[in-house]
Length: 612
Image 1: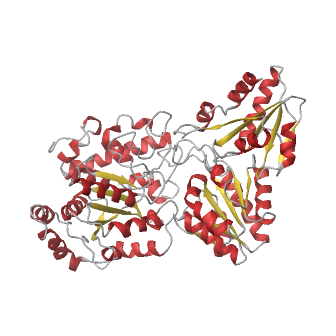
Image 2: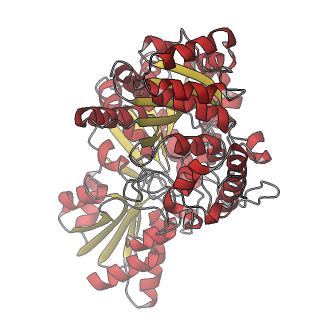
Image 3: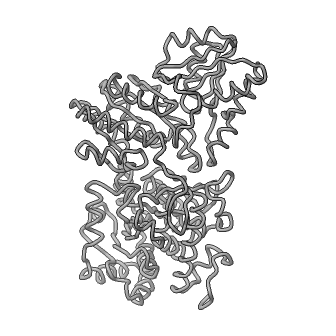
């Protein structure tokens, strides 16, 4: 394909990537960025992180042979270019759409996706498992873990590094350093990596790389010649005396993550070593799109937006997250014991207001949910009131700490579970459907699930000041869409008596659908009473007494079936039929998914009519 104009949509991918010269590679990268911006502007998704890894992905597919060489993307929100280059170019317009391609890596979607991804910091451990399997089978191919520097704040990354460096396997760890995870990186590791980014290692570089390659028979000399031909090949190529050397890795870098020639030279050197290698690549998050480069945090995960201005179609000021963050500030002004904790999600959880108002009492611990919960335990043990705001799907990582470091000691901490229930386009790895199941199995836990903003404020206040032990307030992604009226705002439960013999139960935002369903049924002459639980766990005897007074009770719940509140209510009362979520939930529009799960107002009405 030498000297021919590159057309992304006419290429045989990924094979043709290896045939391009460097000018053609640069043209290909421009076309990929255009496709990324065009698609994410319509579908939403992770933009800035993917714009930063275009050249790195092209270089990976030029040097390695996927799927025989396994590329394990950490989180996967930086793997859109990988998807485009591996058979999903023509379907890329369906990204994150119902029945379209996923926004994360999925082995069931493509043989080029080596491992499931959605949560941070698992890539090194997964790649090491693959590398050991290859070693045991005598397979010479490589396992490559690609992770961002934000993932290096997660403890699992260090557990993987500790074992990988001494493994004598063909594992390559590529650190994509851009100074950002979602919020700006924090902690000592971020500072350490920043020093590597800027350290001048020119004097050692050339001889060090040559020494590695000279010791590599057959492959070393040809690779060395390739590297010599690049004017930037030895610029910042090998840096000794790093912690990664001490862990057993050969260290290559820092490399310019937007220079394919330099990237390719570094990756070929890493491939030639045939032992654990750590490659440090410097990139710019949001590269190639000015609004994303200027505001990488805001363009990490976005809804649809206008390309020319970068302005999103919908602002997030009207959301449960924002209301929680502002209310927590109000409470904290009155009580200096209140502290706020986040795991690299300051903006996503609405804690930016607290961070600005009370910087001394705000703690961003990085992508380290396990540490966050134990840290809260330490704060609580010393008399503070910690409030940890975290997405439901990420709280899963803290289960041992919830039991061991909070519950057993009877310590009081507030967990604000954001993104509870169906989230939507991020799919299975992000649906917040398991927190009820695992939290209700922990001693000393109280759970609130407000259905609107006013209840959220009341529940947060009770959780902070009145509850003991672990007090959980869970709420959905997005804004308040309740239409049942403020007269039913409670912090325990609300029982609407209409004279029916059938009771419809729910909690959280789903109660709005139950109210609508009751109105649909009323127009058909079917009268149902409704009950909204607000303090959903532990269940109380007075609620059970009300429930037992009905001939038929239907409990609709936006949570996983096993361990759900509806399951517990059914066991408690006997006359309750539970309608909840069984199995994993794919990506798609939340309203569409709720309808398919039988939890839309129309489906609730239909189910009720069938049962009656």
